[in-house]
Length: 317
Image (cartoon, rainbow, N blue to C red; front, side, top):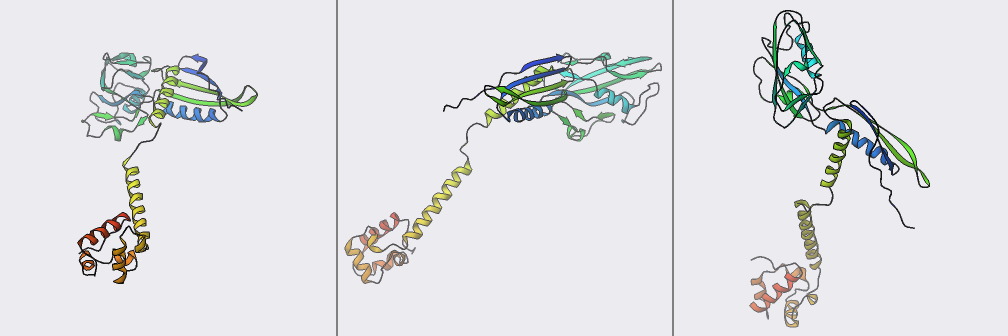
């Protein structure tokens, strides 16, 4: 019986509305719905790059627990509002955005002065409510990254006085969930249909988020296809070879002289001297053997070669 593999379908759009999208993948092999769904969800939440404010400097403010006369919000509330502004950063270099307004005014993200590499997805986002006739100035640093990074990690060096470091949430994803249901494929009814819901902050389309997550998964899996020949494997082989040789040598020590590739005359001379086995032979030095009747330089050389063939040698001088 020939086994046929059914491949899943490409993602299908169920609905797309604003920053939220629902997509389906059909004909997944039984169990693959959860395997693929959980993997994609984790990648979507952790591995898609985004931009975030990492530090803020407000005119005449030295720390985040201060208040500003003429502004309804405290500095801490202003920082929380700034975290709700969603930036798109084109390029990997950090950029600085500035805000300079005069009250009374409802300050929103649209009041920022932006470099060409930065865009704001929600310009209507509220920043502060200035009730008095005062000037309000601040500058913020925008950086690109992955996931959530606490400010202790971002600020490896001491920041300037008056600069307030912030925790950064770089991920452009607000929500990502999936569900799996069974479906019919041929005669079987236990194949999986995967449905994925993605909601972003507007800096990336949900469809693009799904496509990028699939690309990340494919790239990661391709990098681990096959095996590498590492140092450990080589050392292991050498170790096994050494162990094998030692074992062979140990066994050869029990070998009889007659089993060595030696001439009959040399074997007779050794046995007449009381050397009956290879184990007794390797206890002798070359000089000691030359003192035996019938053993000269040529015979010692022949004995050394025969011992080397079984992984042994004469005792050192």
